[in-house]
Length: 167
Length: 167
DNA sequence: GGAATATTACTCGGATACTTTCTGTCCGAGTCTACCAGG
DNA sequence: CCTGGTAGACTCGGACAGAAAGTATCCGAGTAATATTCC
Image 1 (cartoon, rainbow over the protein chains, first blue to last red):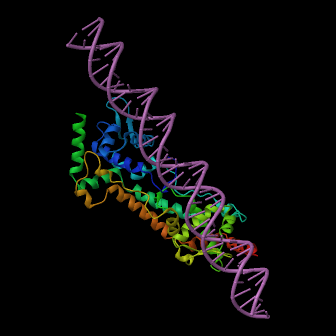
Image 2: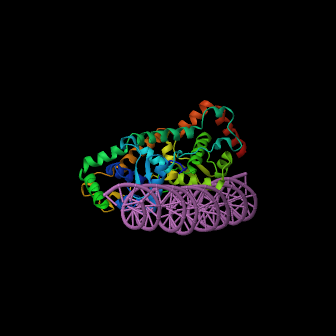
């Protein structure tokens, strides 16, 4: 959280996205505990818990405590973009932070430079905007649908495994 | 080097880009030492040296040792894209690395999944491609030109300061 | 005076500590369920 | 048989270490320029 955003991505993003797809397949009827999601993907339970907490803080998933509790999607999967998940985990701050070094040194940028931002920061901003737009164009439902279109048995197997687990 | 590429960008990228713009203004006649570039921007000399070494390894700049040595652009600034500089510093590897967790857990993805890559990795790849395309569209000469168009005195002052420094 | 040579000073290059971030883990607070006792 | 209370177990939530990467720095190898000396 609160880091930057376009050169190095945390590994938790991948886990969070897989968890969201699994939650989309499970349906909103009953929430899924962290232990179940972790076992589904062979991930360490406590760390996945950390990521889901970040998603809950961002309003992507809802957490219900107590017995039979767990996590569930806060909105229909069609309304959850990949960008929402990425920003929930890695923060909304951009990857490039301009330190305004043009104002340092023996030749500081004059008052004229204050009108427009640093050209370097401008290019980086454009690139990050393009990156964000691409991520905002895909939703969790889209991901689930594409996987199901290629391997239709996947969601069925997952739902069956979940049903057998809850008993 | 060898890290990833789209969520967190190193600070050295900003310094390297500023250094390249300064080198473009200085011209290829005589190379500039690291100390001069560092003093121009008020940066710590030894660390900037590290970044320039990375640029030299990537073939963006040439280094000439000995007295009156220093760094100079290896190509005309019109042929150096921002992406070249970024990749020289932060590496060419993408920001998102798919660990193929769909093959782990109690329901590993079957043979059908091997045909196409993970959908999540696919989206990330598209987003990073858009990011790279935006950075590849701008060159060092373009940056220098835009700055000169807004504040025309900037390159003149820098050339004068360099001339006074070399004596 | 000219040329070869040894010296000198300056440059890059890689190897070395320190700080910040990310990864991974643990235990406590809160809540729903189920059971049990009483009416 | 129905209802209220209570004990239990399960869940999330934030606080706590370890590891990795990034940041900042230093000193040595190599080279060009320069001053010197010899012819």
